[in-house]
Structure formats: structure tokens, C-alpha cells
Image (cartoon, rainbow, N blue to C red; front, side, top):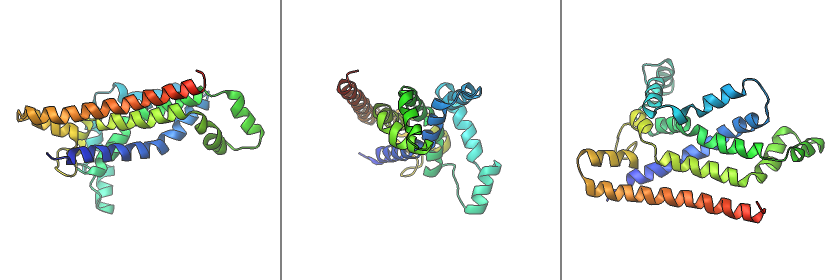
Length: 223
């Protein structure tokens, strides 16, 4: 049995969650604090991957990253970087597709904070950056863990976007979800069952860990 697709899936999910944490953090903090009239527009833009068909998002990402687009052509001719049908391209595509799964839990966590606690931090002379890292983040651990784990789990289960952008190159872009699809296509249902069962088990354990952690946190603080 070839475990490479699982390794690629978990590597992709880990990198995506790591990168998205630093990208989503300022977005989530800003959206939780701002009263700008553009807030609904930004929230809708970030949440778009939740309702947009993966094939649509995959198509636009495929075009944007390909040599036919100005960006893709610039990257390939200047730096020799080819993003389409490569693992690097998969990471970029996954960051777009999983963005709301990182932003929304963090935003909800920040919005649930006691405003007086944040105001006290500012009165004590702390900057917004210090308040974010030393006051806000330590007090939204359940939301933080949820955001990271859900983003990881969602990326592991990606199919449409990764197939369109990365294709199915063994050892490079052939992740577990794509491998299962190909097994079904050639009617290798035995291996498809095995791969699917592993994915099902991993997904369940990931979600179970989130709920157990949150339950312990709620019990600890009497919520």
C-alpha cells in the first residue's frame, strides 16, 4: 500500500494551516475591532470559498497561476517558478480555499472577548500589536485551536481545487482525495475503501479532538 498520498495530504494541510494562521490573524483582528462600513464586504469576500463551487475557484486559480496569466508568466520567466501542477501551487490554492476556516473562528473568538479587558490593556500603554499577542490570543485558546484544526482537516479533504490546480502527479500533487477518485475510476473499490476508511478515521479523530478540547476549556472556565 502506498502511503505517499496521505503524506502529501498531511504535509499540504500542515503548511496551509501554518501559513494561513499568520495571514488570517490580522484579518480576523481587524474585522473584530472595526466598525467600518466596508466590513460586510470584506467578510463576504473572505467567506466566498464557502459557497463558491470548488470547480469555479479552481478554474480561476488555475488561470491565475498558469503561464497564460501575467502573474504566472512573470513568475516563470523571472524566477523560473512554475505553480501549476506543482506542490507549491497546491499550497497557494489551499490557502485561498481554506481562508474562511481560519479567519471566522478567530474573528468570533476576538469578538467574544471582554472589551474592558482590551481597553485596560490600551490604558496600560500596550500597543495594538502587544494587545493582540499578549492579551487577546491567550484568551481565545478554544477558538485558536478550532481554527487551526478545522483548517487542517478541511485542507486534508480538499478535492476539486487541488485536482484542477495540481492534477495527479505521483509523489508531488497526488494527494489522498485524488488517489481515491482515481481508484474509483478504475473500479479498484477495495483500495478505495481502505483509503476512504483511513481518511474517515483521521477526520473523525481531528474533529473529536476539537470538541474534547473545547469541552474541557468550557468546563474549566465554568461556561
